[in-house]
Length: 403
Image 1 (cartoon, rainbow, N blue to C red):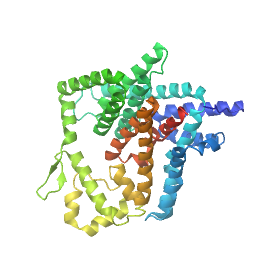
Image 2: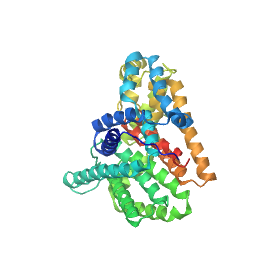
Image 3: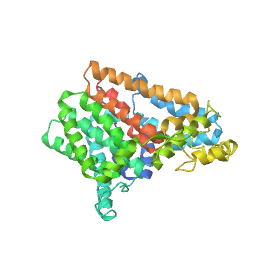
Image 4: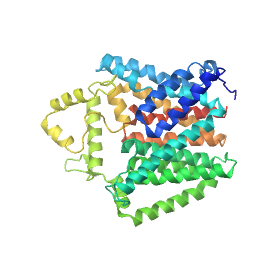
């Protein structure tokens, strides 16, 4: 692996400052993430080895998503306005560019880890403080403890970060005892906050990713069964956790045969997905446009009539998104972008899975598990269009680390 250097010492210092602030902002600041993320992309564009970058199909594919989304939105119902929203609100695929540069600069790894750890500790500290001061340190099914981010995004960041920390711990690459202790302590902190967040989709997603990673290496099974026993103990000893966990599978059919749920959140999602499938057929190729759903959806519902609206929109219904990335991309971006986006991610998943099996490559195993975690989250959250994508695209550079 050829290291990339920045020869100008002032630019080098500026790069390190921006990288540090970006990593801290991941868990603590939406505005910081936007500002320093754009700066990272612009700075890295001048120092990336574009010849080598161009040979990496998965990185080129990620970058291609950005102009493709802009182009598809030009033909959507939202037209130019929707394309402009993509330009300034969806730069996340371009984060593979600075991620690639960091992967070629080992001296940035420790700086990035320290900054991420600092931001993570601050955010978790705020979460624990909120739990104690606002909720009195008592957990119930109604308690949902967030941090600097709203509860949904906080749950996603916790699930992915906690899994990544365990991946680092289980990689056998930590040589010093204090490094193992620090990573394990951060994992425990993240796991506690993940429980307190009371977010079912991130819980489920973390469980899937953690299970896959542990079963990829028999040496990790002791951690799997240990954590599994701890979770069972927590669920059976706390009625709030037990109620919240059991509600995940709360699904039934009503008198008309329509799938619904006794849980309002579940019912709302199921109804939104049903409406999304009906609505998608109105503009299948290019969709409504990025974040341009509400007006055409309300017009569609008016055409469908009051009986249809009464049946599907009375319980926790959102007119702005579909509470699912799969349905969200289909409705907002259309079937062409939908196919490219999901075939791209599926391709990376299966190629990484092949390397994990054939080469026993722990990095590929971790990337597979992080992708699997996101695939589960995508079922329940419209995270494809939001800040949560910073917990996906930079990880794609992991495929380059061992080459």
